[in-house]
Length: 226
Ligand code: HEM
Image (cartoon, rainbow, N blue to C red; front, top):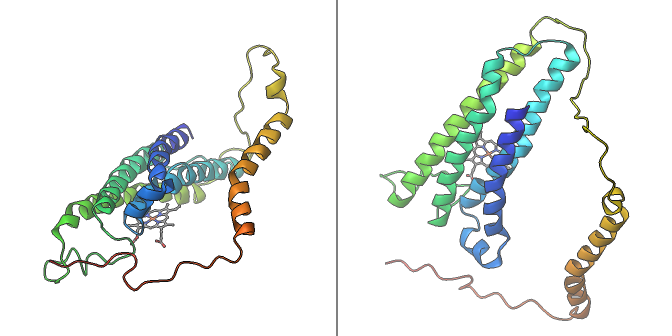
């Protein structure tokens, strides 16, 4: 579980940092619909979300059935291997995205195919990095399933229990009233939500008659071919 959770958190550092690009109005324009987006979100959904689900699933499976985990060494390697894979995969996709590589595109048929007139040599390195990282991720996933289904097929060796590890405090902590109650935090949360949404809601209510700007065929920008 340590390996699964700590690797998820490490990946999420990069997921959060690259998410700032998506959240920024001007930078979002640069990466919109490029491979930067799947590069970014595999660091988030493929990081703590996916790894926590994998780790907790096999932990619960073993505890609830009383079966020892099959190939525990393989299972321990999985989150570390997955993390190396995602870092390479996402670096490739995000680098490609910054130089315009599109997402949701069969790159092999078009831009990576030297015999296609759409061939673009700039996206070869980034796609190959994505391929290498994706291969490592696939291998980690395969090892996990070997361990998971191997555990399912094992004979029960102990009584099924569910024993979630908890940590005990060594001594009574000094009580801080602000941290002991949800109320001040709920009040602060309410205030922040109000400050965030009030301008947008007020704008929507006060501009009900304003029409959207007309669409021009040249929007967003003409493609200039040299
Ligand atoms: C072996 C592991 C994985 C590999 C190699 C992989 C690879 C990819 C690639 C290359 C894309 C981009 C496709 C495109 O834009 O043309 C993609 C999209 C996506 N992936 Fe993954 N992925 C993996 C695991 C995961 C996991 C674990 C999740 C979520 C838990 C996930 C969620 C998604 C989603 C939501 C999309 C977007 C699909 C879309 O554009 O509609 N992937 N994946």
